[in-house]
Length: 393
Image 1 (tube, rainbow, N blue to C red):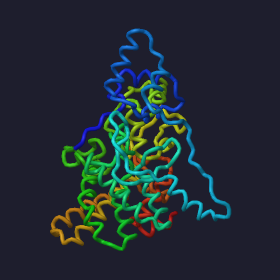
Image 2 (image 1 turned 90 degrees about the vertical axis):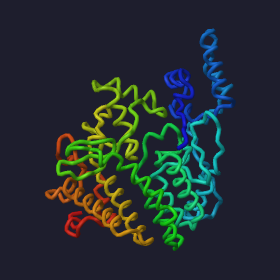
Image 3 (image 1 turned 45 degrees about the vertical axis):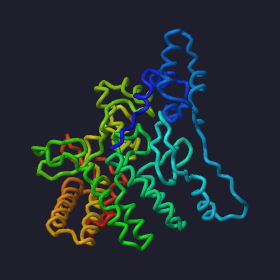
């Protein structure tokens, strides 16, 4: 597995000074900057300038980094006479990035194939956004771009063991809603080729193992390990998480300010903020104890409906893929049992019979979280909700 260093470890001292200086309105600006020369040499010169008392921070950054422009919006110019649909089709070329070249000291994790970015300050690929991008690419007939993006995500799984939030080193400690298996399914359907499943089955498995890591090591009901929670009836369900509990590099000063407003331990605030970023719902009142107070964030205390449905979908696609290649029935049946237990767990812990909707479940309070969100639609989307449950909507 390749090792990537985050900006705070590449530029210790300089990173904290820049992020706390207010020089850039967006904390993401510096961590996306590209060094013009060897990072170790830049750091040595920085220390010398600080020691001599002659540091001009703005000038130093200009001399040593290619700093991205802030608040850049994509060029939305278009030819006259085009329909809205035609203009949308043209956006793919505008938002497509060529394969990356590795630059030492850059936070960008280079990808080997073209990919689509959201645009503006989002200069990299984002995991769960890309599934919905692929739905649009399918409508535009850009199967080639879908395939290159699936291959990029497979590359990230092979390189890192999971798909990070985005292809930046500062995103490695977390993922996003696991849509990779659904991406493979979309590509197989678009190409009318079931061999696509077999090609990426190993990567689907590796990502699945990332999400259930520690499941068999949790000794007792009511305990948890990273992204896995052993419920009171011994059912294993998942939550969002982040492997780190420090301020986010791309939102350093913002996270520190939130922490300073709270009486909670900083590492708990930071972990919960990061976990909300893994959910993709950053930031929604869904994760907050007090709906308008970010300092009350409690992401890791909740069993999210959407996440468990998506992992259940991954299990379904693994089962169907193994059946296609003639995998041993014992292995297939074991996975079927895992999926069955998950669906039953979602129903048991997240279905609110009285209100007729699915809700997140609070691990600590041992009750459903009394705040409906659109995540309640996921069991309808993947068709695991019963007809009776569906009628309640």
